[in-house]
Length: 268
Image 1 (cartoon, rainbow, N blue to C red):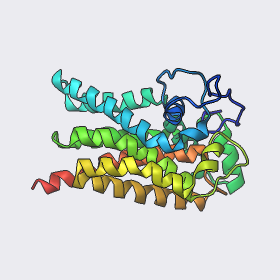
Image 2: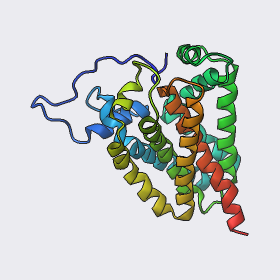
Image 3: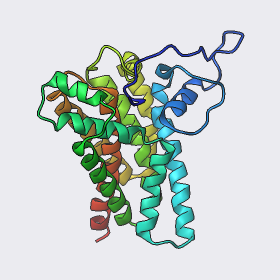
Image 4: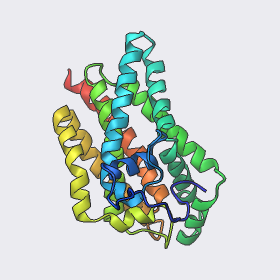
């Protein structure tokens, strides 16, 4: 059973003895769920972290961009540099979204009823569809990063993880949830249009700072997430936490792929 689909359980109250919430509790909740980075203060309620998902993604992207610059300073090959960045992102996130991608691929590419596909998602075993799906996305990420022009590479390395985690908020807001319970259920419960607007502020600013290619990345992220959600709804009774993770992985790959395909042509 994955973090994305584990049954909801009662978590300790993360408020202080005075009953007040700790500063940046939502950010800590998002970081605790989305990363393997140690977070002080015990367990935090997941639903308080939804609007902070893009912020955590941009923090992850910043770490990747710094690592990428360090590898470039060491003058390692571009292919090795790109591979290390993709593997580092998997490590920092605990492969949470990769696991969701595999479970989603196993479910939606099977010849089964919508209800049976939900059962397949809960199976802890990974099938051929899941392995092939993850390998394809990882290869696309590595190849796209390796093809990015040097000048735009740091900005897109930074931006893509933020847009991927913003896509989770978008999917949770727009599409119905497919289960009565699950660790994605608290996200769906607080995924309102208002919270989506709040969560979108930082990614919009980030896209504007990056410039035209950042705006293109933001548009691609929205279109791909909505298109993926609509397609999944044809195959499932509703989306799940695994679907949210799959959306994150696909959006990251598309943002880097879009930059790799568009930027060389703009330079001509």
